[in-house]
Length: 340
Image 1 (cartoon, rainbow, N blue to C red):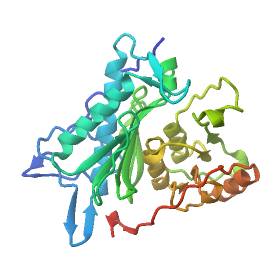
Image 2: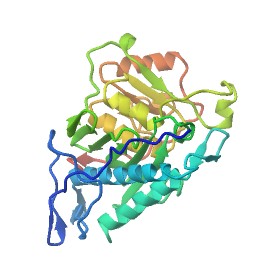
Image 3: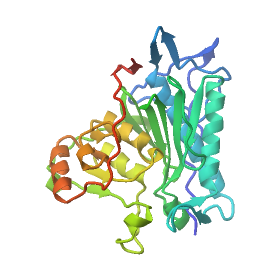
Image 4: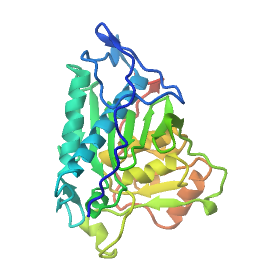
């Protein structure tokens, strides 16, 4: 039995119009109506400009673009679910690593939408199904997961999402996650905070805050398991995982979980979610940057600030360090979304 979500991602009110060759930047006002699902203006927006060796990016506008793109992928998933056999799955790297027709279709829709929005602006696209693309210095790179939580989609469970992040030179500037089943959208822009939209609550954006005044002993924690056969071997043959990676991370941003920790994830599993967490006030450890959890083997780590230190100590005592350690990448200086 497949889970066919209700029609909650219907078109929303139009965004400000386009005058001349540039698109107006929609301010991210809390309580304002969400942007429309698709960008309808024909002219590509100006999303960055150069001033000598300094490249300026409008992270507020990139955040809106990420919301549009994630919404595009979510709508594509909903349309596919109306077809017979949409949740039939094949396997990839292991017997539990599923892919359905929805996964590549969602990625392709986001990729096409990005081309329509940005026109000739240089960018590259990395996706779980389409492969990794290398961007040139100063070039935008999209990191997409057409369906995160494909096993849930295949099983008929509603816990799955569409994720996309926008990165420049290894630094994620904007990201969004859209849930086809619920219509919820979560997003962040570097330096702009994080927000979410839930059509079941009210038709306006709500700020995300990872901070809760509770000790670690009273907080829920989340983790996952690797698809790698060597890691899964000692584990149970069948494990029910109700939440996808990005959903775990998102729940830290919302304050539902106190922390999240997992090894061996791909960048499309965490790129958008970690930025949303960080902008919501959580302590995060970006892979390869020598963050607070790097001594554990460079895992994905996100935690509410009031419990982060205690959680790191607990993980270390529990022997959570990975067997391999990836080398750090060069650190970059960022000021108000500007790359130096």
